[in-house]
Image (cartoon, rainbow, N blue to C red; front, side):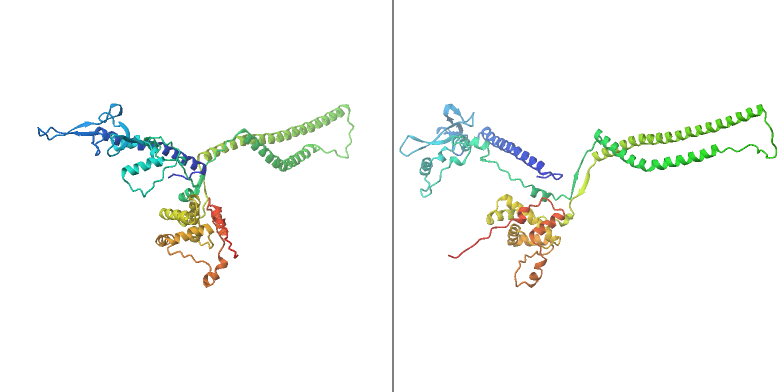
Length: 472
């Protein structure tokens, strides 16, 4: 299966199942069309069978010389002529020497051509030992060979089903599929993964945003409002002092004492009242102007908030639209592409067969082990010193046993022959570096840190049971 982008495991399984179902429906119909074409071609061209089962030649008259031989179509049951119908049949039978009584063979038919005879026959005879012995005797085969009859319990088909019906099912007893997503993932070797998300600005988001904005404004106003009030109060106090200070127009000399009459007293009283009125009026004007200042500041803050909220709303909506149409790519692999080791397909086929045959693994375990062997080779290429797990070590040994294949692989991937150096006391270099070699689990963890995904942890941690032998 080839895909443009890496599929998720769920989509991978759905895609494989759809391909299998399509193959189940298309394969029989394709084969039947080809078979029908061959049958129609043979019948339409009136090709004479070598056994003379569809046409027979008519003998020429001895009195005349003719260069043309005429043929006559064979007639079978129900006056069926091979000239008109290629599916004419009769029951197959043997006739013993010096006897005219036919011995019918169970399930077998004879028709216009051997192929048509086979398609119309059933396999009933091959489920019966006596019928098999009859064919063996009449055909003159060696009696030292004893064929084993078919077992109906191992088949989903009935004994009396025709071969043509078996062909319609392609003789397939059971369709089985083994899907291994890990092998698919490693074959694809994706370097980046991308995803798309859509975020809409709904009422809940707007409410939460306004509450957050309100909380922020509360903190700001709590800090700045006292300073604004203090500043306005200082201005008010200064203007109050300036307005209430009254300077005399003329000084009264202490030497001159005049006695004012009633009119002068009235004028003085009026002047005093007018002075008080002017002072009170100026004071009220300042009070009104200070109120205007406060209300103007509050109005400005409210207008600023009213302008700011729609602006933020529109900006967030544009941001969400741009995010919904694009994709965000995240690097999930730290390992470079040329550092990832891939075992060739021919090597995988060999290792798969070897592990199943010699290590008694099923196909799924064998493929998982080969995939983790690739990861172990990758660790070696990256300079990670460590031991392979027991299952990976078996796959490595199997690879080494095919020396031409392993040598070619080592030269291609590592540029040199990759030796397998087990620990033993005589190898001084190996003994000195034994403490520097990490166990298999540490190699697994290190590969995970580097970004290798979908590794099979069981292959890295499984340990075969130890065989214990005790003397009697």
